[in-house]
Each structure stands twice: as C-alpha cells, then as structure tokens.
Length: 398
Image 1: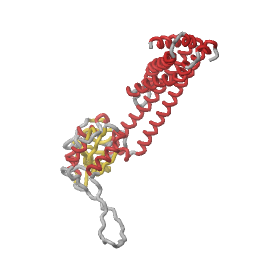
Image 2: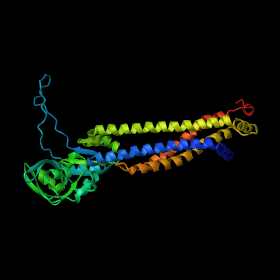
Image 3: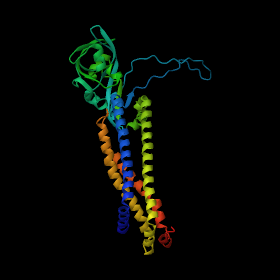
Image 4: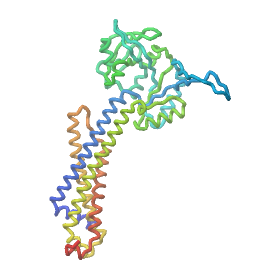
C-alpha cells in the first residue's frame, strides 16, 4: 500500500501540469455541483416558507355527511335524483381525543385545534368580509408563525385583542390600538388591533382576523367546539401518507398540503429533477476529465510500468497506483471545489432576495461523489496498466 501510494504521488508530481489541469477541472466541477445544489435547496426552502409557512401541512375535519336514499325497494329498480346534503354547521365531536391521537401520530411535530368562521369586519361605514380564526397563540405559532411577520404591534391574543393582516388594516383604515367591529348572524363584537401581520399571502392578509380560541368560539357560536385540527409534520413529503393513515384510523377527513397545493408540489419536484440532471452532467464531466488524464498517464508511463512489472511488482500494486491517483485527485478536488462553491453561494446570497445557505448534507454528498467519481474514473486506466505485458511495455509496443 505504501509503495503504490508513493508511486501514485510521484506520477502526479512528475506530470505536474496535467495534474494541476485535471485538479482544476475537478474543483470547478465540484464547485458547480455545490453552487447549483445550494441555490436550488435555498430557493426551495424560501418557497416553502413563503407558501406552506402560511398554512397547515395536514388538516383534519369531521367527515362530510353523505346522501341517503329516501326509498329502498329490494328487488326493484328505483329512479333516483341524488341531491347533495344541505350545508349545515357541523360540530367536531370528541376533538380533544382526536387532537391527542394526532399528536401521538409518528411524523407529526405539532397540532393546533382551530375554530374559524365567516364574518363582517367594519369600522365606520366600511365593511369587509373576513374569516375569524381562533387558536391558542402558542400552538398556532408552531403551525403558522405570525410573530416574525408582524409589521406593527405585538403577537398577543385573548379577550378583545386581535391580529389583522396588512391588507385588511389598509381596507378598514386600522392601526395598532384601533377598535373595529366583527359582525355575524349572532350579533356584533368589538375587537382591538394589537398587531398587524404581512405573510405575503393575500388570502390571509386581506381576510384573517386572528384572536384566541375562546373569543373566536364566542363570535362564531361554537362554544367548546373547533372546526379543524391543524398539524405540522417533520417530513413535508410524508404529509399525504400521514393524512391518509390518520383518516383510515379515525374515519375523519384529513387533507395534506400535497392535495391542496398540487401546482407547488409539481414545481418542487421539477426543481429536484432539474437539480439532479445538472449535478449528474457535472459529475460525468469530472469523471471523463479524470479518466482522460489517467489514460494519457498510462500511455506516457508504459515504459516505467513495464520496468515495475519486470522487477516483480504485482499487478495488484500497479492497479493500486492508478486507483490512488484517482482518489487523490477526487479528494483534493473535493476540498478545493467545496470551498469555492460555498464561497460563490454565500457571495451570491448577499444580493438575492433569499439567503443561500449550503446544507452540510449537500457538502458531504459532493465530497462523496467526487471521491467515488475519481475512483471509478481511474478503474479503466488502472486495469489497462495492470494487464500490460512487461516486455511489450518496455519496448513501447503496449
């Protein structure tokens, strides 16, 4: 092993120009790999934060009532017209028990019981259709964190305090501390603005009035009841399987973000596929560069290889010499390429609207791929060198 490693380093050092050229190629390839992976992963994180950060990843609700036949005539054909059931207020019976079951479900990291309902928000002569959302503030933050999205006031709820979106605040002329009325078919309630948020989602910023669970239950007439259970999961792409499993186990309706946001899911998967294709072609270019240089090295050093074989050096040692060259080129290129790729990614992150942060797992993959690529690329030249006939190699016929 020591002999093969020494010879590998000696060959690389003697062919300094070629070694530096291929080393630069490997480093640039790895840097491109790290740079592209960092940009795409950071873009995905930002996209997910902007979209899924404003919604639950799994939502559990009572099952919708199904239509029932008014006439059953066994053995006879009955012409029917199926009418959908009339929409009505449904209570979520036993929701605390289901909330505890959802919290214990593997893969679920947070659960928030929520009550929501339509209302009219008004101030003076202006009125806007809104959605009253009530939840425990601490639980809601683990599902939809409005605190860092506040553009005014503070994150608090309870009593007559409420958070409103900046779109609704602008429509009604609200500011922090201003009172406004919320009207339903059960009467009107006066609330006071304690915070104004901007999530970037018009559905929330223009319509949501967020208050405590008890206050929202009073406004919507759902004393002690909730309309849904919101959940956050540890793995975004496992949300659909978790929702299906929970629905099958409890008989409730469970929908995931993957059902509600199909276009987003398609976009994320398309980004993943394009990233994999780019990285594949980059690594193929690196592999061909290493292989081409080592093939030339074998041709140039066939006389030395023949002498080594003639004095008793085993084929295994000759094979190891060129494999070591591939490993050395891959390892040094990985270190230089990762440093270069991280520097470029962080530099670009200073001017992009979202931060670019290389993931440690991505850097580990880049290093592993570079080492594996160097080793695989060296296999063919190494086998050619090991199978040379010593006499023919010395004469220059090999």
